[in-house]
Length: 363
Image (cartoon, rainbow, N blue to C red; front, side, top):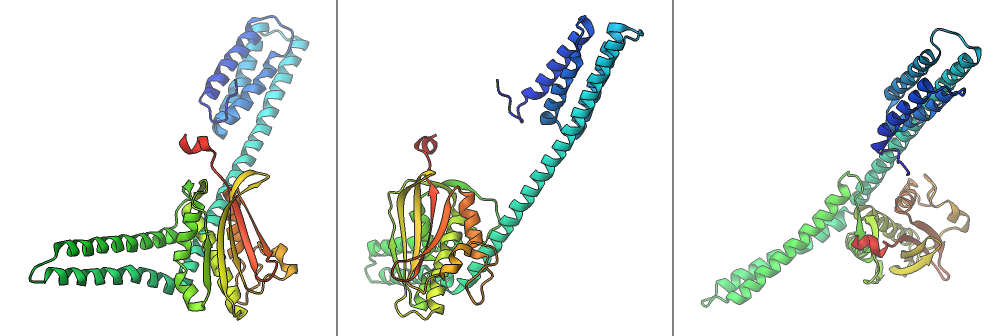
């Protein structure tokens, strides 16, 4: 039976094995170094307890080895038996030393991985807040639209109610419109707060096309300001992916802003941005792909291989962190991201994520 490193059976197994080895070593006349088997107990203790527990278990094994020798041979000294005892003690001590070194190295590695994860989370959060700052005008516009509609519905409601014969049906429809727009404004604010909040990723089943639409809504004002035409070719019936909504929105918004800025800085006359989603099959299996394509100048061929390197940028005022963060997010979701130039003009960045297995969705 396989026992995992976190299994509560480990301490029980170590205890039973210790008692068994001691009983055989102390009560049977076998001329072999039975106590050497205590090294198995030491190795089990490394997986079951921290450093103090391993030291305590090692000490117990050493004591039991000496007690078993004294029980079997008393105070008499037998060269062969004493040699077996010393070999067993040496094996236990050496195993414990190496096991403790390995445990310390593993703990240090875990701590470094946790520190790296925290640093990546902090960097991703900083990038999201920076992006929100760049989209301040667009966000204000998106929030203002439903608020203005609420005011319009409110005025209409008052007019219907102030008539000599109040039209309650029209007033009710106006109030329904107010509620719809209030919900819309609330959803926009919720998305913005989610992007600004510093929190651990929450992986749930998501429709990538829906996430892409929400992301496009947040850059509508920027699209209008720069004169970029947005084209959406998103399939609604795509299978879900297991992902964090906020992080995927961060990736899509970053890719959209990169395309907008590339066309604006190049003073392109025909500024078009397209976002497409589709189902594809890769070496990893069935995936959902999303592609953001622009009609800008494209990437210099010599730079394509370095676009996702940290601090490498093709922008005048860029920091070179947007695409590397996108890559780390996509790869953390089990996907891949790549960049290429279009056949005619412009560039495209696409990524794909593995779909959730049918049994996992319903399980």
